[in-house]
Length: 475
Image (cartoon, rainbow, N blue to C red):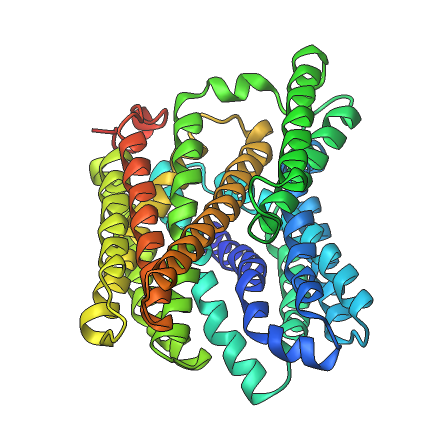
């Protein structure tokens, strides 16, 4: 391995470490919510803002963050995002009031959005050779896929052994190390030459549209999906999205060039990402609820239950997935992986109220982990296939937005489905645990259908634009 190659792979590790902070933060805080609520005197309705404040700004700033990276340099924006996220983590960790914590969480979301939007672009540009790119994206895919379930375990450890403040303070030393090593290892890179004019109207409309949509989605279950508030917010988000598209069509320097979506694989991969994210969020969150509320697991036991799937994801993401992409192309491992996820979710849909870990939990975990490890790498590669380096940050922001919106909307819908089924079973005379489990079973079944539909979409992928450079074609 040459010094330049060694430097690039070390840079990949640092980029993944920074992104892992962001991914962990989406789940690590969930475990600490009861402790936060008790100490800072949050009401049950106000406590959700510890999560929602982060989701709102994170979802709203992904596209803008990616485009700013293209305009002003990916490394510069990545560093700015890490610094902002780290400082906001410090503010969260020392917060002594509800208001301070919620505001700091919102700032965390902005920093997290910028980091997530440009990290994948940096990796794509660091590894232009197709075989190395497949390996690098496999590592990054494992961090994105496995970080959420790792956060459940780490959150339980930090909250139980120390204090809820440490779920935020643990980011400080990591952020400092990442900033120092990014400066030392990453080249400054390129940005769009000439006048770097920001499409302010487009930035404002798409950011507001995404924030309104996220706000409606995360509150839909509480307000009711047919309520005036939910429909009004979703309608406003849709109107702003249409206005954004009109602006982008007319303006000379758009925030999002609409020609980007003429790339076939990018469009197909993002559509599949929306459906798969819904299924994957169901796996992470609904299986954790099943283990805790139905089987009576502690937070630590829930985290350990996810460990086998994390290990199998690591095995595939850190080597086998790249080999499969090189050998069989993008489509076959993506379709096979998504179908395995669907089967794993079907097994969870059959888990009984007195389920046994070895028979009713582990098989679904292993299949879901195996499928995710196989599919994440080719999906990310397909979403960036054929994208010019000048638009790589934007394309990265688009796929992250697809995952974010698909996951948030899918989880909200699936929780509603589970709650409605539970209520119906209780009215029919079922016991509370049996009714709760029946709701989860139906939600898992719907999630399995979403994963299967994502697999069907993936069949439409075309041969990779990089096929002529050494990457296997899509068979």
